[in-house]
Length: 164
Image (cartoon, rainbow, N blue to C red; front, side, top):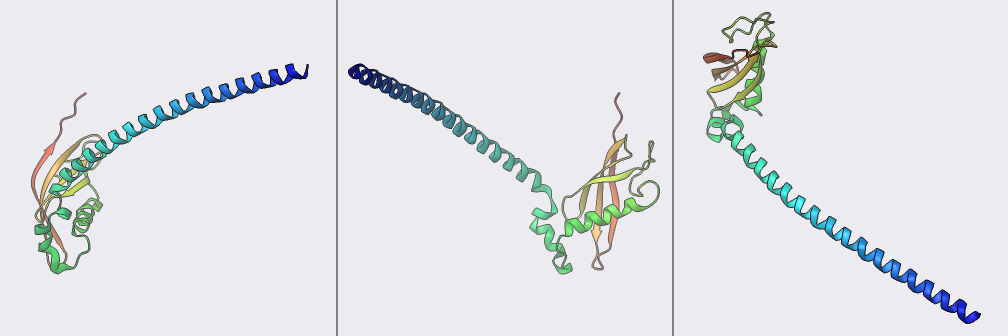
C-alpha cells in the first residue's frame, strides 16, 4: 500500500510539474507577443512624434521668435520677449468699448475683438477676430518704436461669410 501511495504521489508531482511547465510556457509566449506588440507601437509613436516635430518646426518658420534677423531690430530695446510684448499691445486695443478700432467692420452679434495673434516678423502680424458668431482675419503692419510704443496699421482684412 505504501508503494501505491508513493506511486500516486510521484504521478501527482509529475502532473503538477507538467502543468507548471505548460502554464509557464504559455505565459512566456503571451508576454513575448505583448512585448513585440509594444515595441512596434513604440516605433510607430516615435515616427508620429518625429512627423509632428517636423510640422511644428514648419509652422514656427514664420514667427518673430524664430527669426534672428527680425529679432535683431529689437536688440537695443532690451525686451525679453518682443513677440509677447507686441501681442499684449495689440490686445490692449480690445479694451476700448465697442468694436476694436483696427477691425473695419461693425459687430453683428456683439463687438468685434481680436482673438488670436501671430507675429510674423518685425513688421507684420496675422490676427483673427470674432464677435462670437462671425469671424475674420487681419493683416496688420506694426512699428515698435524706441519708447516702446507700437503703431498698428491695417493692411488687409477678410470677413468670412456664414454658411448654414
